[in-house]
Image 1: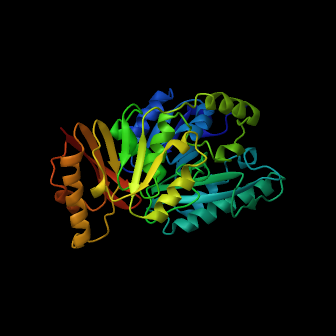
Image 2: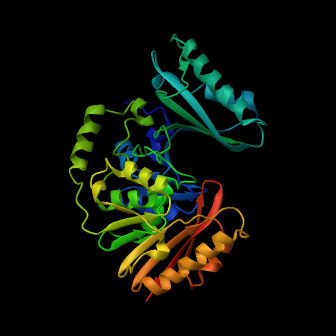
Image 3: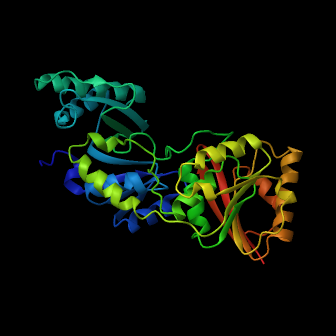
Length: 380
């Protein structure tokens, strides 16, 4: 196969991650046999063979997207972007009968409107096809054969294949959601940072729709993160061989195992608990997750285990109910959770003071555009 694109020449890729998950994502990449080249803003440049990229899209728990760079260059303006983009052999990727879509990220010092950059790359792709004697490719509204990512930074532009397609946080198991759910990739990162290994019992006393516990179960049971997904962006790449990939998936899925520890979630919202049950019913081992309609203040002792939770945090510290909630949670840990470690994630940082316990760990994490903290409390 000819080496037309940057990733084919240097074997380097970019893993997009949420803020604070770089360490967890780096561990995932190293365990998969990848070499970390550099840490970047909200991501990691890593090196591996292209088949490993296909596999990572199926297994990675904390990575949002994996980009395969096609070309990088400096531009003077939008017309210069067009001139350089049309030199790329797009016909190798987007040939007759294939469609494409584009996404754009970042900010340019020389192109005022990022959407205009997107249109100029679109024009370059379609004009290149016509100039090489091919049919003009169609732009897809959804599920494109090839998704091209445009990243703008100052005067530089990087064009990449989005090998993931939809963001990898979209696992495919959620049938129902609640208010302000955690992204699955963030929930998986929180489980990683908690160092819960599936051996001790796990409790989320304010579990909502159960995202933290679902991600914990999938990790402990060796259920791949992409177990329920049907497609990825790499399906349209020239190196992809479906039969080989499907055979690899089948072999990997044979490693799914039972979890011996007890995983429990509780909440006071019956609709959230119903959603949690629906979301876990098809996951291997999901029938063993225990969900209870109960206020954590009324729970009995939970000892020698791990607690992990993302309690409500609202927008204003003045909410007296939230202040009481966090204070009561601290009391619950002190009086009911001996010999346990508790991990609390919130995006309302002043509320952490209301817990009334000293933290042994504080990790900045981002939930979308909101900055939060993951705190560990060691209860003796």
